[in-house]
Image 1 (tube, rainbow, N blue to C red):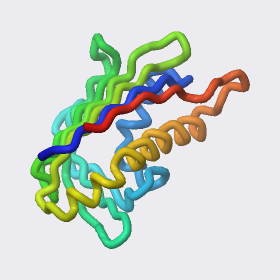
Image 2 (image 1 turned 90 degrees about the vertical axis):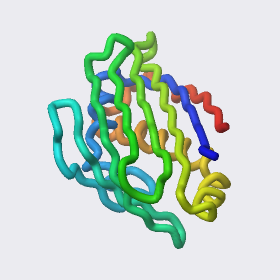
Image 3 (image 1 turned 30 degrees about the vertical axis):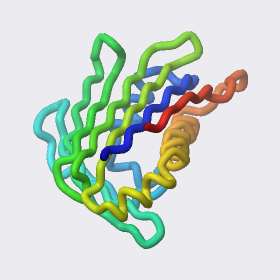
Length: 163
């Protein structure tokens, strides 16, 4: 049975900047918790790439490959969809949508996964909600590092659900 998580958060940066930050998969190890390595294996087009990531926490270390579809000009806001194609997952899908908002951008993030290993699935489920919040916060901190933080900026407003 797969695990699903969704997170909505308003952040102060413009949608395009956030899209570019999340789309830059090769730089994930510089700031993303548990990501030890990342590279683009190949680009299939200007908007489709195949990415390989190595993640680890505690005794668990895994590599996986995803198909990343970039939609910078989507009418609903810039969007990034990923689908796992190799690795420890029976199912891996994620979607980032960056919608303009009066205070910057409304980020909608959805993730669904199912590990082939029941042990790994159960272990990750125990930590999952907090792990995703830390991951989204890491992207926000990276945005502050790259783009600066306006003096009058308010903290992000998160809302999330795990099913």
